[in-house]
Length: 202
Image (cartoon, rainbow, N blue to C red):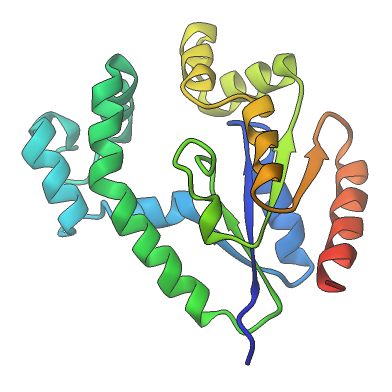
């Protein structure tokens, strides 16, 4: 069996990557969600969690010894070096899990939902990329609503990521398709179907 076409699905926070992933999944495409894998590598008893606790202390744990994500997020946005340290601990473990999941795929396409594709220079792991983007106003509103946070926190999270302009430079390294997610879900469904047809015929 030939290995599948590996497609990175990326885009700004709260631009609708998960919706796009779900639509592709409905069409039978295998989806690997890096956020999901990142949760697995910090479950109680994992090396990922014990390394985080070793570095940041027990303040990042809930009373039941699970990871307190809100506490970790506050640490992450409070100092750039904290973000670097968290990523240094977790990213190799997440990518290793990702490669294991890709090996299990039997279909022609596999889409990996990977928010920090550009920031972490991971384009080399993929054959193509899909960028989901929306206008800045919509992104801010969606993020505030989704995470139940104020405007200041939302802006900090958006600014901690790269820009759409930078993401589009991916096209210098691999073929890229862009999905604009500013409109109704029905329009989105059609865009995904059209792109699916294109990809499956490669």
